[in-house]
Length: 87
Image 1: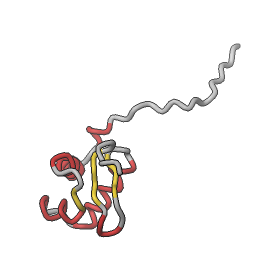
Image 2 (image 1 turned 90 degrees about the horizontal axis):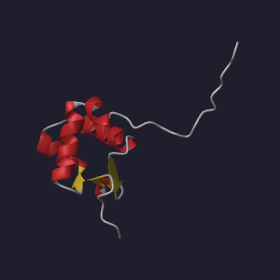
Image 3 (image 1 turned 135 degrees about the vertical axis):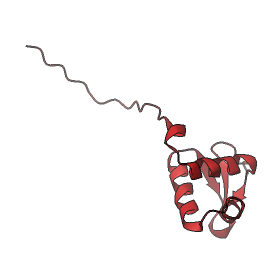
Image 4 (image 1 turned 90 degrees about the vertical axis):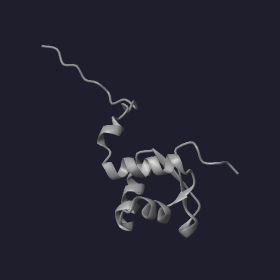
């Protein structure tokens, strides 16, 4: 009888993100790709979505590492990950 034990590794396998995104999240990603530095309010107005779901979707996309924010409060704008201008 042999028992094998594997130590946990730091490797995190890549996620299949594109298939798990909702239609709204994909539309938001496309808006950010088309208009880098777009504000949340502009996303809401251009897509005709409600404000709170857009806020939630932006937070989800940011947590997945797909987008990043620049600025704070009303001055916050969104970019695809790695495409924000550097100061």
